[in-house]
Image (tube, rainbow, N blue to C red):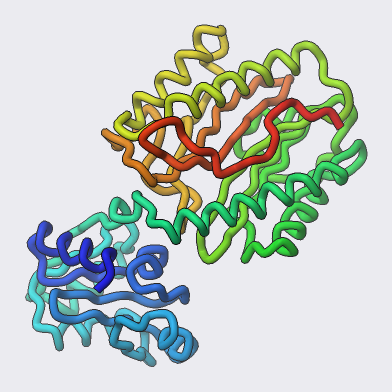
Length: 354
């Protein structure tokens, strides 16, 4: 039995439940290796079942070798109810943060004598193993290589939509399964929108352009942001850029095992505040990256992570967003170690003037 399943069985014991029903697809993938959707895992101390449908049976045989396959033909939750009845389990952990009210109501209606307890499994995915780290590293390499290619596309008159399309095309050609999230291309005044996904706005000379994108390799995500200038940057643009770069590099210095997510975020935030720009940094410093583009641990004011551990993977992405000016964000995906964080994103961070 692999370490992931051992940890899950320990979780079952700690939560004092008979079994756990897993319906969040990234967690289905993490614990079983199966990468289809519309499926669930039902796991107890003496059984491991993957419930799926005919579309995925052949795939599941290859990917979920440690699981008994259960085919559903009349609805996923109907089959889940049948399997719970067969198991005889009376207290079951469910992923309450992702299960809908309708799904929970159905289970309660069909299984009136079963107690359901909300459990959180995402924490078990925070520390990455060697294979996961390599997958994220490969996803970062794809994004880095795509960034090199996109620089020749960004020029006056080109729409943000076109840049995003070319960027995603490059990543697919380089081996990405898909874009890790909706690609952000925010030029000029739109740069003040932290999540300014690409629009039909045309890029103009003299504008800053923020690119936030990521690749997926073997199911694992990367996340990178770079901001470039179309033409020669003004003194104000250089000033804001250098403030963000300084904060981002400082983040790399202090992201290390043993520190809390709040502590790291606060230190970088204080650096921008001391420079007089703290109020323009409107989001957290970073987030975990893995099978999901945003996962635990967080580096933010609201972080629940009391202590980073080696082999966690997080982002380091300070940004400043000023209305009528635009914005700058610089982001790396980084590996937490016992010392200085190791960037998995390797694209240059000096201000590029196209």
